[in-house]
Image (cartoon, rainbow, N blue to C red):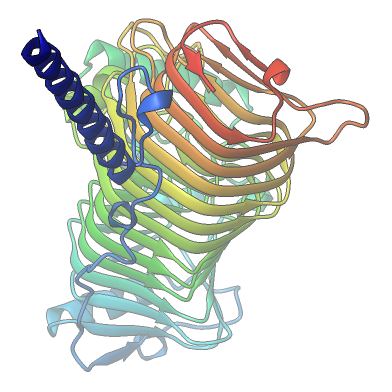
Amino acid sequence: MKNTKNFLIIIIIFCVFFATSMMFFRYHSQKEKGGDNNNSPQGELLRSHDEDLFPQTLSLAEPVFQDRVCNIVDYGAVGGGKIMNTHAFAAAIADCAKLGGGEVLVPSGVWLTGAIALESNIQLHLDKGAKILFSGNIDEYLPLVRSRFEGVEYYNYSSPLSARNAKNVAITGEGTIDGQAEKSWWTSIDEPIVTTSMSELYRMGQDGVPLENRIFGKDKGLRPAFVEFFECNTVLIDGVTFVNGPMWTIHPLYSDTVSIRNITIRTRDGRNTDGIVVDSSRNVSIEDSHFSTGDDAIAIKSGRDNDGMRVGRPSENILIKNCTVEEAHAALALGSEVSGGVRDIFVDTIHVKDADFGIRMKSSLGRGASVQAIRIRNITIDNARIAAIELDQMTGENVSVGTALTDFGDIHIENIACGWTRKPILINGSPEKPPHDISLTHLSISASGTAFMENVRNVRIENLTLNSSRKGKESGIEIADSEQVVIRQTNLPKEKIICRSGCMY
């Protein structure tokens, strides 16, 4: 009997020791992964802090040019902004390229011109005080060239400044490039002819009309991008100011290894007056730049619906760092044209002064593909008129067709401070394919409204401070139809966390 008791005591001690050891191991294992087993239905959630997720820089090759200078004045250019210099620019570029490349110099002064097409191994350099002024005559932008309009391929007027299938090319200097779009020589996007043309183009893309039959240009009213790099490799844009472009100001399309830094972009109000639109391009850095735009400051896209899926080229491996947004619709926009996929996006240290949205990720029915591996941190927003952070999986654009949903996942956002907004966090997901694996950490937001999430899965919200900007009102968060939402370390009282399903806090 005594031996039996001793044996039972030994068994109990062993079981306690084993259980304690397993708890200790699981606790420390979860701490190493940034999770907390007591707060996660699955015992493991995403890491909220991981320096490996945020590269300090991208090691991109940059253009190297021969020590040769071809001054446009030597090719007949006349300053003053009254005489057309299209042929002088073309002659300087062609001669420089024929000799093996080098610098095409634009000296101080105002230089009126039509379309400029850069070639491989050409650096267009603007001296301080130089201004390239693009003509208001649309015939200067012929012949029509292949491009994309809002994610659908077509033939349209050439961009005022472009490079096509070029390698080792740059735009540098302290001068200004002015598209003169404020003079309305490009048809306003609000005109009925533009609405009709857009619907026609979207239908062509959706129905698979051969590209050679998608001819726009005269009497169609669709504007080209201002500065476009089409199928280019190893591009540098450094130091220049871009103003008054007809549409997307800088548009890397199907390009690889693009470095953009120290630039300023100012556009007029209106749709498509974006700053930089990275479109189905890879290995892109955007650093130390300033934006004041009527539409999005920086946008990342990869094609619309069936036509974007046909092309099938993602935007990927993109670093955005140390930028200032004075005014914009969205300071940072991912989408809504994402049908080729978007992945490996790194954003670090952005100051947003005034925008409708601070961070905006969006798609619509018919887009398909995925938006994955998104890392955003250290964003300060003075004023966001609509929302500080928005993810809308179904924007409901009436020009979209089809049912394919975009898969949003592996999204990490941390260290966000917002002085005022209406909606601090707004996530609208689909029950068929909910956005998933999202971490929102170290957020401090003052808002007149509450945070809202619907149809999300596996979300960690940690170190959240929401303050109400309305006197006598308290901030809150509402979560609906979701799974595995963990809220930890927040200033919100429990009664202000309205969770209809799937939450722990």
